[in-house]
Length: 225
Image 1 (cartoon, helix red, strand yellow):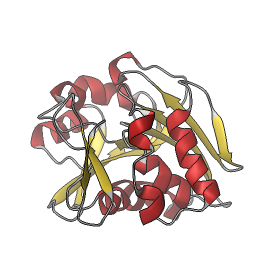
Image 2 (cartoon, rainbow, N blue to C red):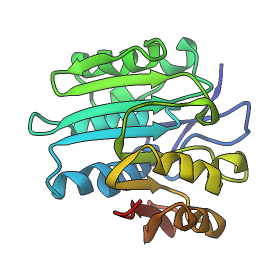
Image 3 (cartoon, rainbow, N blue to C red):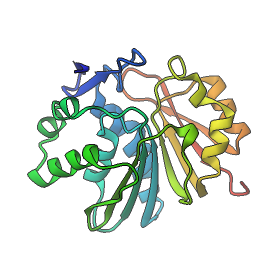
Image 4 (cartoon, one colour):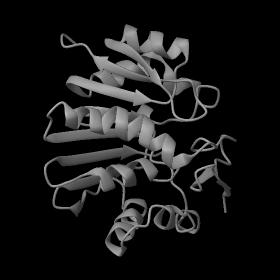
């Protein structure tokens, strides 16, 4: 069983045995997801009038980003959610996560969360009429798809743990999977990463980070990419 930590907003994060780092901020897993991915990514695109939003998440992890996107979704916007995870949590671990209690999930919402974790690789699930979910159990290096995305949730472990996932090569790969005017959102604001984004065709915007972090990144794909 993995090591669980209760972050400062009461929600769990998990320490990766493989990489020795936590999946979320110790200052609050839920508040981090809300700030970085929901507010700067999903809500940003909704406020810009997009009615069908295709999302690619790099790093499914505990499933919190996917769950909170599901909770944010409504009948006015269709969400097509794809997520990549090379090392999925065991059932013993994901059934211990306290998100259903902290977020006060209904039975339907809790069942959707558990289905996200238990779903087979590349099997699409309709979790709501307007929310489809597909998980890929693979590494980003080995991932390919014919889909194009409007938002990239980039939630890989930090460059100190997985430096190879923050390179120009990886950002170019993601850029080629994006629709025009797509955005990439991430907690990371490291200079070498932002340079890799710019070299891959993204315009980089620094935003105020979640609690405990001064800055985060939202990158916009140039229209002529």
